[in-house]
Length: 363
Ligand SMILES: NCc1[nH]cc(CCC(=O)O)c1CC(=O)O
Image (cartoon, rainbow, N blue to C red; front, side, top):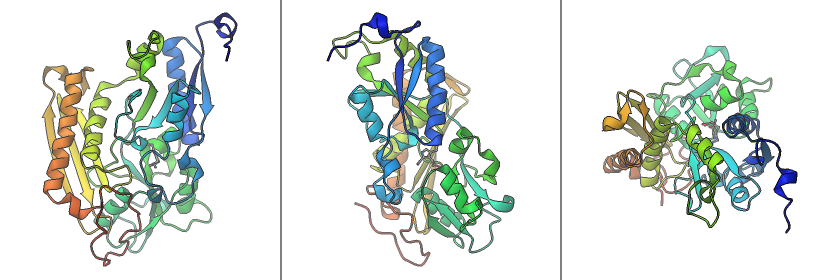
């Protein structure tokens, strides 16, 4: 294939970058924001390229799709075969295993909390007995049941608008739904939130509220391919990266990796950097509501972190990963493997009856 001479196709400021995105309102807003920042940082135009993913096409329950990668695979294929140069994912949808030829950075995280959306300002504590709460997430289902065994959890899925309608629309058949605050913020719908559920009451999914901005490693790291890396793009990514977010999500995701669990497992993890220390809280909960294990662990980042800020440093990455591994081992020691199926996709309706006995054993 012959390519157009650069002098013809290159607008002032340099060759355009193509940014791959899912087509949902949430994805388009997230990607639009990142695209504008990359334009500012590189001085090059950024075009959005819409990519349909398996998670957008299939209609089964989110949990039953198998979790890992349903929203991600098609975007990664587009990166790998050159249909786009940058891809934006919700970090919590990204499998924990590193990709052999792709690299990502994490911009500063949005609000990590889960949000309850109900009429009349109702909260998890004030919903009436028997109220029906919709979620497609085994993690949310397990924690709702643990907090309120008297509620009925209903498996739902669909985009933000569809899910909100189930509780707030004219044909609402549920009393409440639980969604990520970050997603609602990004589509400017925080008006529907009746409770920002504290992370102590509902541990967020590892990486919730954070984005991953992913590129081909060879485009940003010298010596990976024959060609020279794209300095402008590499510098822009370094600017986008937020080290405190990066360390927090590394710790959270390493819990999941060490548990060999995916994004559909009933596992919550949330880390924050404060006073130069990374503090990680994690929960494994039985989807039936039959119990949960909660742990908090800390790691000092030494002189490389002050207050809630840190340097970008590989040694700190290792400390964050170790913290996650220690957490997972502590959870396993406490019986996490018997409490919840970790290695396989879990359905929200697993043991939906508080009396249904122990959940099915995971692989
Ligand atoms: N699992 C789908 C998904 N992936 C990211 C978000 C929201 C944004 C975020 O958590 O960063 C959502 C929707 C939701 O959980 O309500």
